[in-house]
Image (cartoon, rainbow, N blue to C red):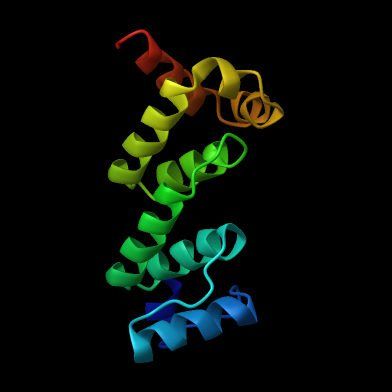
Length: 128
């Protein structure tokens, strides 16, 4: 890892708010006013810096906040971070609402940018 070579961890790739939220969590064990737009990058930061309890809280929030329009973002996040638990939850959410989700612009973009993940998810429809 580049951090090991440099001998330090750079957090310049994180938004100030995400750093503040991450540090606040480490001191208080709570996440205040979590919203979808902050949960995604906070999950990524927690994963990157191996703060697994924070990652779990973000996962739980994402799972309970799934909607037709954000399911593709959650699926991409889970796939990118190899989080099979949240990936399965999101895929099940999509499969249960397949006709609605597959008609969305978000799904069409996912099919263009990550056709393998889209195919994997669509294949699960026929496995039901």
